Amino acid sequence: MTFSNLCNEIFWKSTTDYHVTDSVDAPMNNPYELKTIEYYLYLKNWIDAVQWHFEDIIRDPQIDPVEALALKRRIDKSNQDRTDLVELIDSYFLDKYKEVKPLSDATINTESPAWAIDRLSILALKIYHMQQEVERTDTTEEHRLQCQTKLNILLEQRKDLSAAIEQLLADIEAGRKYMKVYKQMKMYNDPALNPVLYAKK
Image 1: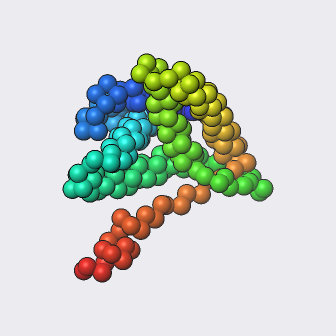
Image 2: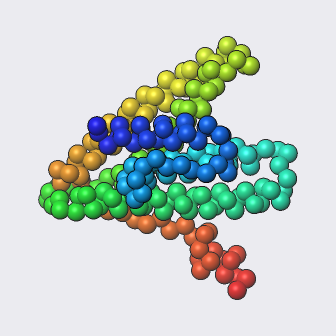
Protein backbone atom coordinates (compact mmCIF):
# COMPACT_ATOMS: atom_id res chain seq x y z
CA MET A 1 0.00 0.00 0.00
CA THR A 2 1.33 3.44 -0.88
CA PHE A 3 1.60 6.04 1.84
CA SER A 4 -1.10 8.21 0.27
CA ASN A 5 -3.44 5.21 0.12
CA LEU A 6 -2.75 4.58 3.79
CA CYS A 7 -3.59 8.22 4.52
CA ASN A 8 -6.80 8.11 2.51
CA GLU A 9 -7.90 4.89 4.18
CA ILE A 10 -7.26 6.21 7.69
CA PHE A 11 -8.72 9.65 6.97
CA TRP A 12 -11.91 8.09 5.67
CA LYS A 13 -12.17 5.82 8.71
CA SER A 14 -11.69 8.76 11.06
CA THR A 15 -14.20 10.89 9.16
CA THR A 16 -16.88 8.20 9.22
CA ASP A 17 -16.10 7.34 12.85
CA TYR A 18 -16.57 10.98 13.83
CA HIS A 19 -19.95 11.14 12.14
CA VAL A 20 -21.28 8.19 14.12
CA THR A 21 -22.02 10.69 16.88
CA ASP A 22 -21.45 13.89 14.86
CA SER A 23 -20.56 15.68 18.08
CA VAL A 24 -17.60 17.98 18.66
CA ASP A 25 -17.53 16.74 22.26
CA ALA A 26 -17.46 13.03 21.45
CA PRO A 27 -14.36 11.22 22.73
CA MET A 28 -11.94 9.95 20.11
CA ASN A 29 -11.38 6.19 20.10
CA ASN A 30 -8.21 5.92 18.04
CA PRO A 31 -7.88 2.26 16.92
CA TYR A 32 -4.17 2.47 16.13
CA GLU A 33 -1.19 1.87 18.37
CA LEU A 34 -0.09 4.95 20.29
CA LYS A 35 2.70 7.00 18.69
CA THR A 36 2.61 5.13 15.37
CA ILE A 37 2.23 7.10 12.16
CA GLU A 38 -1.21 5.52 11.74
CA TYR A 39 -2.21 6.83 15.16
CA TYR A 40 -1.10 10.35 14.25
CA LEU A 41 -2.88 10.28 10.89
CA TYR A 42 -6.14 9.24 12.56
CA LEU A 43 -5.70 11.93 15.21
CA LYS A 44 -4.94 14.51 12.51
CA ASN A 45 -8.19 13.87 10.68
CA TRP A 46 -10.20 13.72 13.90
CA ILE A 47 -8.93 17.18 14.84
CA ASP A 48 -9.85 18.39 11.35
CA ALA A 49 -13.34 16.88 11.62
CA VAL A 50 -13.99 18.54 14.97
CA GLN A 51 -12.71 21.86 13.68
CA TRP A 52 -14.86 21.55 10.54
CA HIS A 53 -17.91 21.41 12.78
CA PHE A 54 -16.64 24.15 15.09
CA GLU A 55 -16.58 26.38 12.02
CA ASP A 56 -20.15 25.38 11.15
CA ILE A 57 -21.40 26.09 14.67
CA ILE A 58 -19.75 29.49 15.04
CA ARG A 59 -21.41 30.69 11.83
CA ASP A 60 -24.88 30.26 13.33
CA PRO A 61 -26.31 33.82 13.25
CA GLN A 62 -28.27 33.04 16.42
CA ILE A 63 -25.29 31.85 18.45
CA ASP A 64 -25.00 33.33 21.93
CA PRO A 65 -22.04 35.77 22.04
CA VAL A 66 -20.64 34.17 25.20
CA GLU A 67 -20.81 30.73 23.59
CA ALA A 68 -19.22 32.13 20.43
CA LEU A 69 -16.27 33.49 22.39
CA ALA A 70 -15.77 30.18 24.17
CA LEU A 71 -15.94 28.40 20.82
CA LYS A 72 -13.40 30.81 19.32
CA ARG A 73 -11.00 29.82 22.08
CA ARG A 74 -11.56 26.15 21.21
CA ILE A 75 -10.94 26.89 17.53
CA ASP A 76 -7.66 28.64 18.38
CA LYS A 77 -6.52 25.64 20.43
CA SER A 78 -7.60 23.25 17.69
CA ASN A 79 -5.62 25.23 15.13
CA GLN A 80 -2.53 25.02 17.29
CA ASP A 81 -3.02 21.28 17.88
CA ARG A 82 -3.41 20.78 14.13
CA THR A 83 -0.22 22.69 13.37
CA ASP A 84 1.74 20.85 16.05
CA LEU A 85 0.57 17.52 14.67
CA VAL A 86 1.53 18.40 11.09
CA GLU A 87 5.01 19.25 12.33
CA LEU A 88 5.12 15.94 14.21
CA ILE A 89 4.22 14.06 11.03
CA ASP A 90 6.98 15.91 9.20
CA SER A 91 9.37 14.74 11.92
CA TYR A 92 8.43 11.18 10.95
CA PHE A 93 9.56 11.85 7.37
CA LEU A 94 12.70 13.68 8.46
CA ASP A 95 13.67 10.63 10.49
CA LYS A 96 12.69 8.18 7.75
CA TYR A 97 14.85 9.90 5.14
CA LYS A 98 17.67 11.09 7.40
CA GLU A 99 20.21 8.79 5.72
CA VAL A 100 19.37 9.98 2.21
CA LYS A 101 22.06 12.18 0.71
CA PRO A 102 20.51 14.80 -1.59
CA LEU A 103 21.88 14.97 -5.10
CA SER A 104 23.97 18.00 -6.02
CA ASP A 105 21.08 19.40 -8.05
CA ALA A 106 18.36 18.45 -5.54
CA THR A 107 15.59 20.99 -5.11
CA ILE A 108 13.23 21.88 -2.30
CA ASN A 109 9.46 21.51 -2.58
CA THR A 110 7.06 24.38 -1.97
CA GLU A 111 5.51 22.44 0.91
CA SER A 112 6.60 19.59 3.13
CA PRO A 113 5.04 16.11 2.90
CA ALA A 114 2.97 16.64 6.04
CA TRP A 115 1.41 19.87 4.81
CA ALA A 116 0.40 18.10 1.60
CA ILE A 117 -1.05 15.30 3.75
CA ASP A 118 -2.90 17.97 5.74
CA ARG A 119 -4.69 18.95 2.53
CA LEU A 120 -5.50 15.29 1.88
CA SER A 121 -7.16 15.08 5.29
CA ILE A 122 -9.30 18.14 4.57
CA LEU A 123 -10.24 16.64 1.21
CA ALA A 124 -11.63 13.56 2.96
CA LEU A 125 -13.96 15.83 4.93
CA LYS A 126 -14.96 17.79 1.84
CA ILE A 127 -15.75 14.58 -0.03
CA TYR A 128 -17.76 13.18 2.87
CA HIS A 129 -19.87 16.30 3.26
CA MET A 130 -20.37 16.81 -0.47
CA GLN A 131 -21.54 13.20 -0.72
CA GLN A 132 -24.05 14.00 2.02
CA GLU A 133 -25.35 16.86 -0.08
CA VAL A 134 -25.69 14.62 -3.13
CA GLU A 135 -27.75 12.16 -1.09
CA ARG A 136 -30.10 14.72 0.46
CA THR A 137 -33.78 14.15 -0.22
CA ASP A 138 -35.02 17.49 1.13
CA THR A 139 -33.57 19.62 -1.65
CA THR A 140 -33.90 20.14 -5.39
CA GLU A 141 -32.55 17.96 -8.16
CA GLU A 142 -30.60 20.97 -9.39
CA HIS A 143 -28.83 21.22 -6.02
CA ARG A 144 -27.96 17.53 -6.06
CA LEU A 145 -26.59 17.72 -9.60
CA GLN A 146 -24.46 20.74 -8.75
CA CYS A 147 -23.10 18.91 -5.73
CA GLN A 148 -22.40 15.80 -7.79
CA THR A 149 -20.32 17.91 -10.17
CA LYS A 150 -18.39 19.32 -7.21
CA LEU A 151 -17.98 15.85 -5.73
CA ASN A 152 -16.48 14.57 -8.97
CA ILE A 153 -13.96 17.41 -8.90
CA LEU A 154 -13.05 16.67 -5.28
CA LEU A 155 -12.51 12.99 -6.07
CA GLU A 156 -10.25 13.94 -8.98
CA GLN A 157 -8.40 16.37 -6.73
CA ARG A 158 -7.80 13.60 -4.17
CA LYS A 159 -6.44 11.34 -6.90
CA ASP A 160 -4.11 14.06 -8.19
CA LEU A 161 -2.94 15.12 -4.73
CA SER A 162 -2.29 11.51 -3.75
CA ALA A 163 -0.17 11.04 -6.87
CA ALA A 164 1.73 14.26 -6.16
CA ILE A 165 2.47 13.14 -2.60
CA GLU A 166 3.78 9.80 -3.87
CA GLN A 167 5.99 11.62 -6.37
CA LEU A 168 7.32 13.93 -3.66
CA LEU A 169 8.15 11.04 -1.33
CA ALA A 170 9.83 9.15 -4.18
CA ASP A 171 11.89 12.23 -5.04
CA ILE A 172 12.97 12.70 -1.42
CA GLU A 173 13.90 9.03 -1.12
CA ALA A 174 15.94 9.24 -4.33
CA GLY A 175 17.66 12.47 -3.29
CA ARG A 176 16.08 14.51 -6.07
CA LYS A 177 14.34 16.68 -3.48
CA TYR A 178 15.18 17.43 0.11
CA MET A 179 13.10 18.36 3.12
CA LYS A 180 13.47 21.62 4.95
CA VAL A 181 10.84 22.17 7.60
CA TYR A 182 9.98 25.60 8.93
CA LYS A 183 8.07 25.69 12.20
CA GLN A 184 4.78 27.54 11.92
CA MET A 185 5.22 30.58 14.13
CA LYS A 186 1.67 31.40 15.12
CA MET A 187 2.26 34.73 16.81
CA TYR A 188 -1.32 35.29 17.96
CA ASN A 189 -1.12 32.26 20.29
CA ASP A 190 2.14 33.36 21.89
CA PRO A 191 1.81 35.74 24.87
CA ALA A 192 5.31 37.02 24.13
CA LEU A 193 4.49 37.91 20.51
CA ASN A 194 0.84 39.00 20.53
CA PRO A 195 0.85 42.74 21.40
CA VAL A 196 -2.66 42.56 22.87
CA LEU A 197 -1.49 39.89 25.30
CA TYR A 198 1.92 41.25 26.27
CA ALA A 199 0.53 44.77 26.70
CA LYS A 200 -1.56 43.45 29.59
CA LYS A 201 1.44 42.14 31.53
